Amino acid sequence: MNRRKFIAGTSLSTAGVILTNNLPGCSSVEQKGKVSYDIMKDVMKYRKIDAHCHPQDDLVKQLEIADRLGISKMQISNPVTNFSGTESEGPDQVRMHNDVVLNAMKKFPDRFIGFFTLNPNYRKESVEEINRCVDLGMAGYKGYTQVKVNDPLYYPIIEKLTDLKMLVFMHTFCQLGMAGYRMKYDIGRFPNTTLPEDMVEAARRYPEAMFHFAHIAGGGDWEYECKMLKECPNIYVDTGGSNNEENIIDFAIKHLGEDRIFFGTDDCYHHGVGKILASDATDAQKQKIFFDNYNNVLKKGGHNVA
Ligand SMILES: [Zn+2]
Image 1 (spheres, rainbow, N blue to C red):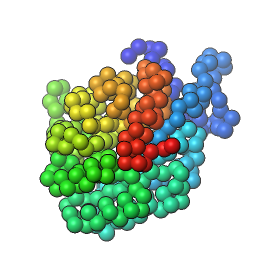
Image 2: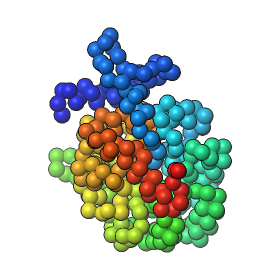
Image 3: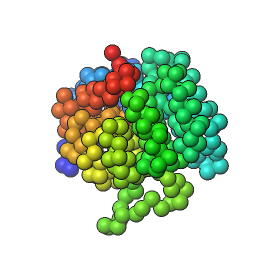
Image 4: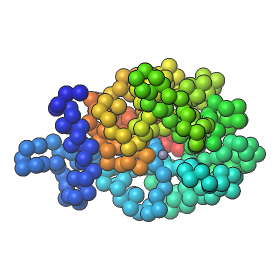
């Protein structure tokens, strides 16, 4: 990293704060004439689909933020996270979670692309829930930490999603290594979290399926992730997450190519946009990442944006 890039990256990263203070009249980030870069012009230059969002309590506010950043569509899912460790993860809970997404889709059909979640431990109920959600217009699947994506419990789900030409979008993680020692996923609470190598195994078993590895900027070892996923052309990644380290986007392009990266925020909107603008990607690459790559995949199942 050089100093110029650090400063450019930092000013884009903090653009969220500046935007919030100056909107709606904000059209440039200028500090007493020192910086002439027109950030809002750059922000609004690209069509955008956010490939990783979750429905917020206040949908109107969520869409206002999207509007300011020129995000026309947001893919939303509501997996059962069980962060507390005491939440039910059964079929009733799954349906309730999907209903939140369905309600958001109903309220703002032009803005939200809904993905359903499942708990694959419940096989019969999972098939029923896929049918219900697909009938109601959902466009893909988002899995969480109940079952690893390479577990045989996932086989029928992956096969069904492949028939529907829908993405197998998984919450994923990969801990940072320390001094050459790679920690395994050993914190005990969510032992079935999908790791990069798990998705690679599933993607090799089902080369015709389409996999989406969540949030490379979600706090994991993104260098390791990109290197692991490199050889599987049917695995896509999104750029979401609250981490904003220099070089994530450029590194992903270098290893995965410009066609397998989706713009995603995981609800970290301003720096989600900023980190792509701050990358060395060309205009054409940015347009692919912000919009075309995801839209092309949605198109296979007939859920693309016109
Ligand atoms: Zn997320």
